[in-house]
Image 1 (tube, helix red, strand yellow):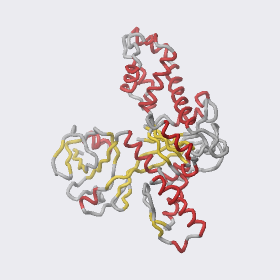
Image 2 (image 1 turned 45 degrees about the vertical axis):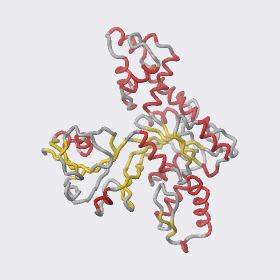
Image 3 (image 1 turned 135 degrees about the vertical axis):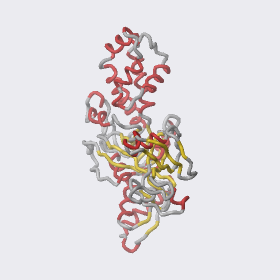
Image 4 (image 1 turned 60 degrees about the vertical axis):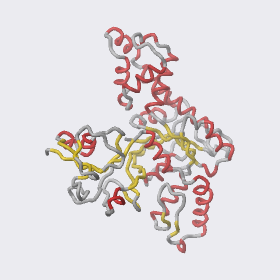
Length: 398
């Protein structure tokens, strides 16, 4: 699974990415700082089973902090998008190509209204952030529309002459975008298009089809970034799109500052929290203390968090993912190296025990015999649907 961090230049995408991943993407106050896509790992919070089992875990692919497990999910921070990107303007073609593998998008919007349509700095509050939401929707839809139309005439004729399913043919054309046949089928049904005569579909209907495919194949969270600097009139604009999108006030700069202070041992802070505690107050300068006080009063107290962790977790909820903990020894909850509750995996709800086996290793999936629920110690079969938080031992003939 992969989350795409998207938006126009200079809205805080790379700051958001760095704050959420501990990565080191370049940050600057001018357009197109990010040219090559940045890849990293973000984390969602889940109760760690170590608390329930009253053991001390030794995580391998994830982290545990005070009984909270931080479960990994891949992320990509792509080049900034500007209007007419689908025509190649700015770095549009590269942006859209980098976006192919993302399952869901976190759209970073400058809620302070201090960057224009091209990502250039402008007077605070002078630009309407909702324009960015509209243009990004349009650009991705035009991009999908362009991909479909490249071979549409030939495809439509072939479907009619050879009695082939047009939804399946479109899905095969879009498979590199992680778009499935059911996505296309739902779009066709929604617009009541003729499956027997696809050559009759109009240009307008084709664009509506692309729009619908976008909404169901690339679900999106809106991060209203720089919320602490935004005029109240602009922050209120989030209500105008709240029926369509989950809109979360964020301050990526604040999260990055808290992350850096935590790494240096100055504060104790858990991502997503509404407060922090000072560990070395005597080692902080007045400037640093004032900055931390600003974050507490203008961000954490006002919005309940910096919003970064909430964006990531809302995206995972939107994708309907659950967390499962595979172990080798269901009695001691260890892997073959003796690590306790070592790994945590995000999988789609409805995944089976055999799906998990393949996720851990192809050999386990191919030679799957059975699995054991570590809580109940019951044997479960290959088709058993997993639940959020399951601890599962997989037995294979290897």
